[in-house]
Length: 555
Image 1: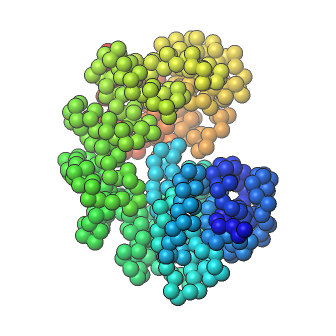
Image 2: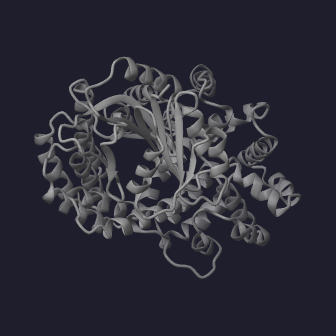
Image 3: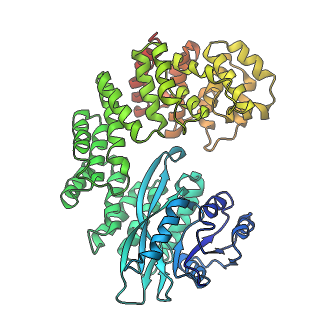
């Protein structure tokens, strides 16, 4: 019997994510075709566990050629294209397959919704549609060497949208890997002889990923100038990315002018309204920001989201919570934070804001009751997450509540030891912290710090407090994702220079926790280093310092 659904993939060095993808489709796809373009890890071994149709393909710097090669090995009526860092919900795709079989669409090519997990730990999502499902009738194939698209030899082709969702975690990968990917993509795009308007959109995206905002903005503008249809999905995405890039480049007047025009062209797309509110918020115009976000909530049923459904409710509630908190309107702030979490309880930052606010205005017993009835009852919030949330609140009493989790069976022995060490520090028992650390080898200390409970920040505070030279050496030996040697030089009186943005964020975090712990020696030491911060960095410190002191001394 002829297969109905063929899943086609091209892969290279995807051993970390491939199994998750294949587990989600095995037994549902009638056949899985995998073209390996030169893996040197265990990708092929994993692929062969799930399919007997794994083929070697010599990479020719052309994604379409590789995808079309995989398609030549498919015998199903329909081809679904999926990447190794993607996966599907098994029940949903099974129902979709049955519906596709029993109620065949008029379209030959169907777009699916890609749900991208972005941000730290993938707590945020962005949405886009991409044509990934097509009839295997010999007339449809991919073109373009990169950001490949489907085309049909049949002039009467029909395209449509499906209700199938594919989840994509690729944007959560290491930043270095993403930058290497962007450099590769740039090379392919630049070498494309005949560029289409959409190519300039893709060029803008790659420069955006690399942090070159000026070039990103330039290419976005060129792509928009050359567009054929303002209602094309890529044009709307381009405008949103352009607005975002302009805002990050501190060109807000231009960004707002584009938003003004877009709100007239796309009156029902919430994204532009949302970015208007965010620009006002980031510039401190909280009256206008509040007005925009409240209007979005009022008209949420009239709007639709282009890139993220979070723009409709979750993020407006989150921003309004911060605005009302700044206005000392406790009731409204708590209400908006709570509404935000009722929509997306995966956002640890909002939990921290809500708990921090309650900690300022409730007794410890009331706060513990709230946590027991809300945070600790949710199935998706593990003891490890609870610890992260509580330790993220700049309030000593809240952080001390983590002590109650020392007996949790879900925590590893290293996590428990790290949590015990953290609570010794919270109690001000630095001598016991030092005694414990001095018994550890360098690998053991690194293992403790890697858990992020008794963290690098805590270790730096102890190092500054004690002036321990051996601890300083340990810090220089720790391998960070981003080199912070210049920050360490600033902290420990060695040759140094102004801190860059990431180093400033780290510096601010150290100061925040030192204030929570009321380590006056450390606070004074850090205050003497303000000259290495930017004007913006000093403004951030001035803004939060009084608030943290108030929180720490609230009981």
